[in-house]
Length: 371
Image 1: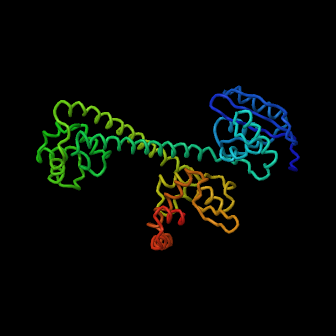
Image 2: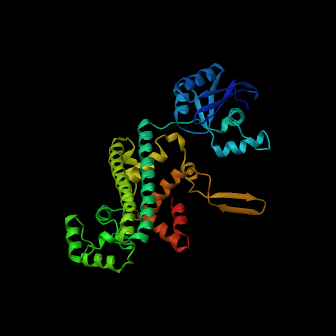
Image 3: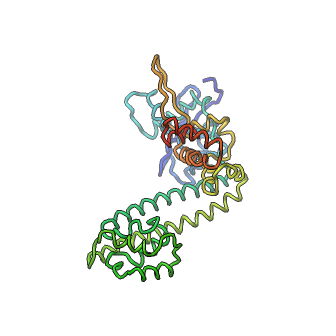
């Protein structure tokens, strides 16, 4: 409340236009306006808030063109989560009404009253931002691949049950080649043990299972759909296979790019020194934690943002320690994935993990405690 700053800004961002509000150090609105999400609009936003004497601007997101424009203009940016903005609205009315202009005012006025509690945004280096975009894109593609593989599996259980479980993974290269050649039970009816053996050798099968065992799996499974209907459904099988091939190709391409980007990053050696951290896991940890050391002044702040530190609620005689729901979900996934596998490569982590499991903790709970 004793901040000598003359004016405070708030920006409620949107896809096509942004609402802006500037208040003085008594909470009076100095200026309100909307700008389009264009280069000229963002330039106007920065010029008008600077002309009003603004040094700090509050906004709900930590990245994007609006944040980049504000930082390039030399303004300090404070990120206020959407969850916090929703709670702060109750200061100004109990009806819970929301509009872009009112949210911009809430951001600006709360920056005036509570800004001393909120740290300025410290952006990561361009190398980390680029790495983060690749890591998150790869994760999205992997999730899509899993979803399409599940759809293919469900489809095959009806039309061609013998192909389900024939190989270790439904979307493995050998499985996709098999389904391209035999998309239906009718087409697979041509196979004999000898013909299957010849096809496997021609397609470079690793040989973990004997052809006789694979042929038995095919013949012991339910018949599925045969005839014209089975062949017609084979077109659906081929469609899923084509999508999975494309997804696998793009994931492989991103894996190669991540290798290059991580190798060139100055912090790579820190994350790759952690147990069980190869390229993908090290890149994910680096991307989600970032390289700005000021963001996490102590280990507790990182643990809390990642949602692995429990949340304690106490009132009178009641005290409860619960799961921390308010967290950075992507950071929590990265930290827990690392912790959940670290015990296989670190003696201390293994001892602690096994002790937690022996005490009756579930794997996810033990994983969070270890994290």
